[in-house]
Structures are given as C-alpha cells and as structure tokens.
Length: 236
Length: 184
Image (cartoon, rainbow over all chains, first blue to last red; front, side, top):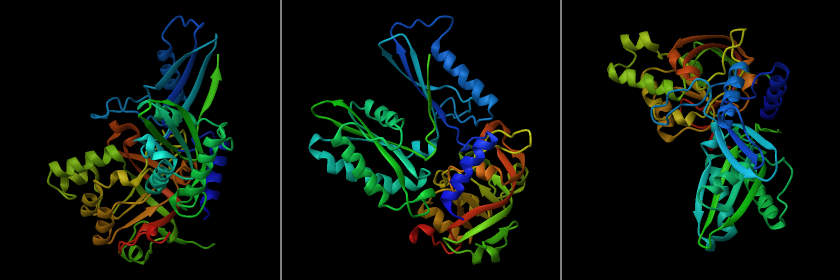
C-alpha cells in the first residue's frame, strides 16, 4: 500500500467525518497580537483563550494531551493551559493565530548557538545532519521552520512563526530564499521519505525567519512539523 | 497487490517468517500503551518483583499480547475513537526490554528503535511493526471495538484493548534483529 495514498485517504476521511487528521491534537500555541488601542473588559484575555480551548477540546472530541507539571505529569484533562505569545502592536484590532502543535516534530526540534564565523555552510550542514538523525521520528513529509538570529529565546519563536508561512512562498529576501532552497534540496536528498519509510519527499518546505542579533551571536533554531501543519487565524 | 494477512494470536512461526521491510495487513486485538502507562506498568512489575506474576496479571498481563503505541482521541458515540494513529516508538525504548522479558509478543508504532530494543527483539524472537504517522483518521476507521482495560485515570494514556481490521504495517525490526532502516 502506497504511503502517500494512506495520507491522502486520511485527510479525506478526516474531512468527511469531522475527526482529527491525527490523534495528537497537540498543545495549543497562540500568537496573540493586541492592538495598543484595544481595551479588554470583563475578564482576562488569557482566561478567555483558555476557556475557548477547553470548550473546543471537549465539544470536538479532541485529545487532551497536556500535563500540569513536567515532572509529576498529571493530565489537566482539558488541554489547557495554552502557550500564548503576546505582542503589543499598533492599531485597534486583536489578532489570534491558533496552532495545535503535536509533539512528534516538537520533540525533534533544536537550538544551536553558532559563532558568527561559522557562516551559512556550517548552519546548513548542521540542520541537514539534524534532520537526517531525527526526521524519521517526526512524521514526514516535513515542514521545517528555521529561526536565525535574535537572542537565545527569540530564535525558537522565529522558527515556530516560520511554520505559519504558506507552503510554496519563499522568504522575500533573495539571500534567505536561497538558503531555504538549498536546505530543501539537501534534505530531500536524504530520502527519509513519507512516514520515514524511504523515498521522497522528506520535506515539503523549509521556511526561514530572521531577526537582528548580537555582534557575538548567531542563534539558529529548527522547529519541525509534520505534514499536518494545522493553524488558523482570526482578527477581532 | 495481494498482501500477506496476519492476525492474532501471533504464533512464533508467523513471527519467525516475517522479514524486515515486509508489508502486511494485520487484524486482531492490540493493547494501547504509551509513555505514562509504560512507566506505571514497569513500576508495578518492579514493585511486585514479577514478570507477569499474579498481581501483574490482575493489572495487565502483557504476555503474548501486541502493544500499539498510541494515545486515542476520546471515544465517539459509536464507541470508537475518531483518530488513532501510531506515536513515536523510541520514547518507549527505556521500558521495552523489560516488557519483552514479560512476554510481550510484538509492538506497533512509528519510527526506528534503539540498539538495545533491536537486540532484545532478536533475543526474544519478537517483532516490531512500523506504520504511517499522521494518519489517525485512517487507522481509527479500522478499529471495530475499543474497550478500556487499565489505568483510566491516565486519560488519553489509559490502556485500551482495540479490535482492529487490516492495519497496514511494515516489519520494522524482525525476529533476527534485522531492521528495515538497514536497507532504505
């Protein structure tokens, strides 16, 4: 049985019968942009987001995959709390990007603090080697988010935001788009293949986001995502 | 394509004939077991100094059984989960040799295994099947019955007995310790 045809049948079945495309319905990541002219009244905004997730995971029969404490590991039973990343932006609207992120790719993600002298070839070979080692565990074909720059905590967030970009769109800066292309080509030559069972494609897209960084730093983060790169956005 | 069909109980002869990389259709009963349930089961086995002894049998006798690494979405009104694909097997590697010692017959999951597990599979003439991650709806549709059997308090990590029909599987590690990743 052809693996890609199983994945296609899976997507069709999920759509027809309104069931999750994957049983790992994720921990919910929310990118929240709050316009600085917005005033939120009658309750906390994080509370509202958590209430929404609680209701959705109950009503839609989604899996509750969150434990309250990383060491004692008791399930919270309602898939909260949500991982919320907030930015204050100009304007009077409130934008939410919701991303239920499964752990297959998440567990295989990584951060490196390169030296500026390492340069792009070192970065590319490190990422390709990393995908070679862990790609089969992350439900390929993969979508690969890469964050370059910022500080220690910023690079992983850039990598996660990079996953939000539409497949097929490249980075607007030609020298970054070139790195994306190079990475995708080398990663697909690994022939890890769909479900890690060999062949092609190993990755559907490599999306890089960048940020200014310190003169001594070159942080690089990779956030792996399976082909089911679930996210949606809404603006109020 | 006419695929080899295998079913439970998986006898030794069937297991011994399976070769790494071989593609089969599997039907029968499997037990769901993932991170938290592995930890608890092995702790219980250790506390009672047993490898499938009396207390262990009351809790969950793994001997001769097939374990499916998955955490189901909640059961729908038809009594079956909406989505039930495999999870990454290597996270269970720490516990697997002990469960093989306790007589676990076979495992179904996704992704490669570590060397210790591969050796243990060879030593016990067991088999590890690998299948397609990210196809939860597809696999759920092949589940005919789901019944909770242990550790209900673990929520989605509780142990369920599933009756499955025609799961497409590949032999990831065969009873000789050969892996399909040696060849791809």
